[in-house]
Image 1 (cartoon, rainbow, N blue to C red):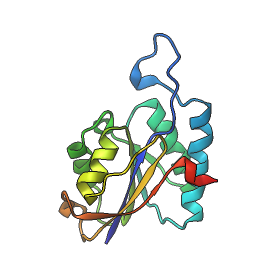
Image 2: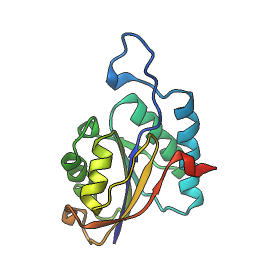
Image 3: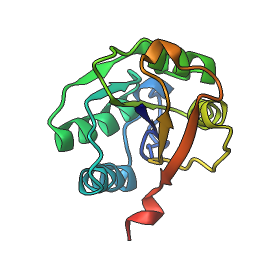
Image 4: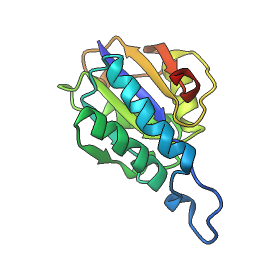
Length: 160
């Protein structure tokens, strides 16, 4: 059994003229939500072992909060920037098998679509949401559409 956390980056800033989409930072709400969500995952006892993030600034900054909370290194994966569900699941299927609990941090609509393809469950995926998916596999290479089930979708609204 493996656990895959699919996380959308926290709320980002739109009002900076001349900044590329890739380079947009988190806004104030995003800077509050990301560490709060990371703390909640620690409090919930999630045994996170690997964090892989899109290279976009907003995703990396969000992933850095998770990495700090879990005392892990964040790994950047360029393929996760604006990735399709298929690409997201391909990145997950390449995870090392000694990792039991992994998180991918990326963007919508890919994260919503990947969660739906993996679990058959569609859920609204606001910024900073984290889908916790159980996957009954022994090797990440066995990860395929429909092989998981959605255990829980955490959103910033759940944080009290």
